[in-house]
Image (cartoon, rainbow, N blue to C red; front, top):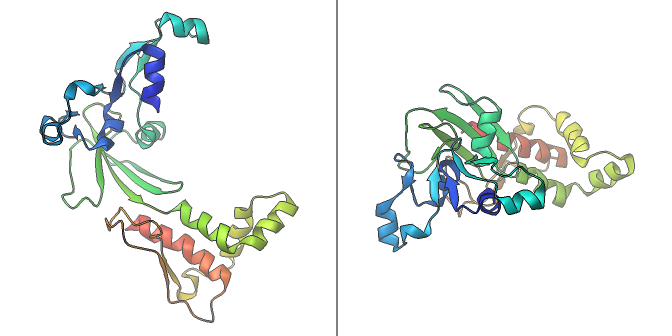
Length: 236
């Protein structure tokens, strides 16, 4: 989406290395389009946008855009970065030995590296990062926050009704319930593979499960198991 906005601002077709890394057309070590891949797929290289480093100027705001938006004509527009690559800059993960984790619909563990390392089994992703000449290694739990949302939507109806009457978020009540369950969720495990998995088990066909479920378990045990299962997956 940002590259379309860039085009509208500048009239230039351009992208940058962090987003281009996810297109499967980029030579990740070389930080440029892969002639080998393009040739094998029969893709004309001239159809692709020029690839920049994230801090590089890719164009400037045109006169027409300046008149329409109030932006100053000639304002530089830089490459920018993909979501996690930009988050790395914002959190200071721009040198070796630093990493961060985020949980949205998916869960991400992201580490900066100045030495490229590509896992031949594809268990982690190696992309160009927003720091020129560097990369990031990223592991992804496909259904992290999505697992909790799935549980809320399918099992936490009473919590949603109570939360609405109290004027609070349903997740607030769910947190309280999970907190009342001991660590280990009374020996109940949750596998968060609702939509397949990416790291470390690259398998689009694997599916989620509760393991060890018995008559002793209650909904709150399952809720805590979901939270712990996502945490275990990120730890993997």
